[in-house]
Length: 437
Image (cartoon, rainbow, N blue to C red; front, side, top):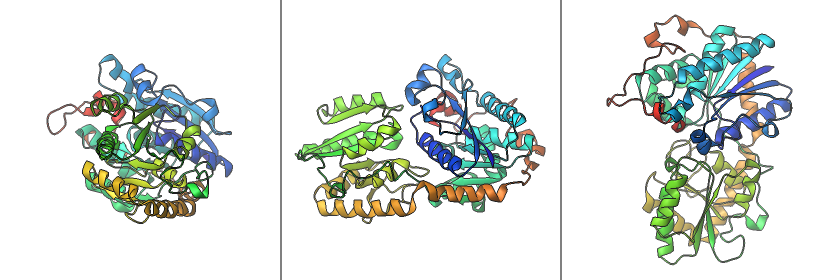
């Protein structure tokens, strides 16, 4: 099958989407599919600082995949003090897919992210007569459409009219249904996956150990997008509380994102300079060593589509402390394979960490159960089986184009969009800070 996979982020962007795309494409090629990757990227200084900028690097594109990078010129107008123009980027993506299809026809189009990528794929699907698949993966499900009427119409059109909509978890699907009234039957639940060959404990003895390096200090780790919505600032407050009790504990913050400077400022404010290490950018190939050199994985996130980093930490044999939130409770069960606390509850986070530190046997038990589960259920071959089944069901079918006959105010378009105010009268926040998607 010839597949066009259109992504909003790919390496060098530091994002769960990048990991997901790379591993899925590797599996698809291994199974004999012909894959073309079309990926947006930020080329401006501000966007590059948040994500890492530039087109897909040749050494990160799986062998056999053709990669086409598209600079998100409409999105990065914000660098010049202008509102983002998602419509322009959607048109560029649609036209690129059409051009590639003319060179050699695709059997199927797959959008990774419902907005704006899903809109581009939906339009290309209608134009080319090729079925569309859309993966809902994060901010596109959590926030898009709650910001302004334009994006509400756009995201609902994608969710209601794509030929298949993939989503990581039941709780995430329930959230999207609540936001947009989408028919729950529209979703294919997939779960997540991680590379259990790359992410593995250093040894059986290391599974759940609270002092892997034997220095008497427990090292917590936050790895991923450094964003206050991921709870990294809450974690700093919890660390300060634990250290005030005299506990030998430190923190590694690994990754980049919009709140790197905010983390550094709070570290200074709380007097944690000697207890916090900010690693900055960490290449995906180096991520296993981050987990191997730490003891407890902390993800006080507000919500997830399905957390890649939690699965990586489980595969690496770390006990996990995270939140009772959308996309997390589908893989972490409190007291069974991890510890949960409420979103934004710093005291609850502190208590969960304290409970783990006081009970090394519990840490080993939680980590051991999580490790076995991720090996049994959350591997890439298993996830690709589920995605491939969707491809096979759609192969050779005609896409739904009925939405193109709707009046413009009721459907997504690539041109002539006016920016409507949000309900509170403020302009759509994503037009000023599109990286928040």
